[in-house]
Image (cartoon, rainbow, N blue to C red):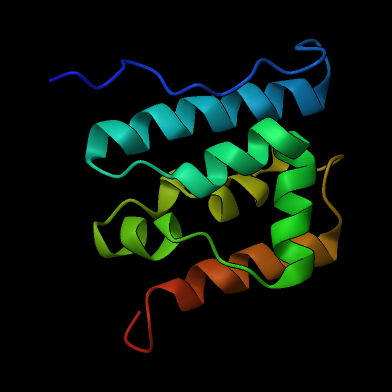
Length: 115
């Protein structure tokens, strides 16, 4: 019962930029994920440390998959994943084609061999 209504995700440096909008979208996703029953602490920490765009690029470049990604896929909510969000056309200027392809591949593989 004592859970906060929203996570402590920092505000973007400039909410009027596309990168700022991406960070606000990630915060909204995190709120929805917490409501679904999983607190994505690693993602929150990375967003707060690096900003949402840099956190996403870092995760893609290192091959690291957030623990919440397979959990969301298993619970039928791949639409709430960072990987899904990266593939959305509204963020095209933030991510390269290769990053979008990698995000889509990672999301597909998060469901396991039967996905």
